[in-house]
Amino acid sequence: MKKAMPMLPKITLKQLSVFVSIYQTGSTSRASEALHLSQSAVSSALTELESRLQMPLFERVGRRLNQHPNAHPIYVQAQAILGQALTLEHYHQYQVGQIRIGASTTIGNYVLPTLLARLYEALPDANVDMYIANTQEVVSEVEQLNIDIALVEGTPRPIDIKAIEQRAWRTDTLMIFAKRDSQWLVDMAVYNELDNCYELSVNQLARLPLLVREAGSGTRQIIDEQLLKHLPNAEVVKAIQQSEAIKHMVSADIGLGCLSQHVIETELAAGTLIQVKVAGIDLSRTWWLIWHKARHQTPIWQTFIDILTV
Image (cartoon, rainbow, N blue to C red):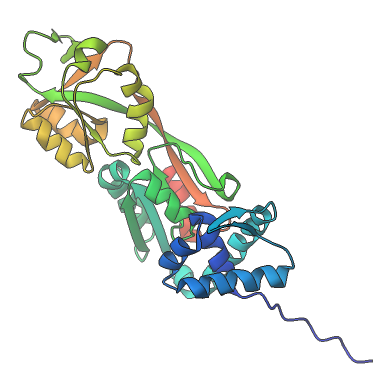
């Protein structure tokens, strides 16, 4: 009796990649841009996948694609398959100790360097790639399996919460601050000599120019949720992409700023900047450790986890 030949899958990785990109971006046009394929090639790959699966994944309403109930379970499986394929493709790199670490801006610029030094101390031959951007962008890279592990300031809000593992890591505090002897605090703020800070009421702060990070950053998320909601009548709120730019603008007395304590600790110690406390405002926040559940957890990955949890 002849042994039955194993069946070869007819579904391709390209079809799965196209489907995942359409699922994440919501359209074939945006998926074609992300994958650098023509829109006709993307549409064809989706049609072929639906044919192989013998089920619809999207409902076509005019030019729009709405997710079919079948789409989500297929998306979870496709993510896992693509993750395993990427792991296999980079197997040698994993063996020699490669890791791709993502970090939101404040963590990447002010906290991650010390952590990397400890990683290199433990594994001198480690091959580390870094991606630093705002929280929203970093989470997106983790979702697409482009990053092995990431540290973010804002609460992660992935498209598929079931595919992303997230763990509370540290607590951080944002500080409102000003140039020492700032023009904006004259005849308004009360100086607290014991705590070496100025004190304002919410109404007083609302009348002052405030420099904050851009939408999408973890810092801005906390500012929106825990500060700006108390300032509905704030006169001037300027959004700026870089923490260093905010710090230098405050040093030039353009306005007050609000950033992580890690960003301004040197200037606070030197006395060039000073904290401004606002009664009734709590700006503490949680930093998060995140990774994709389909990502292969290598020895270097585990070493980095151990460093983070010490």
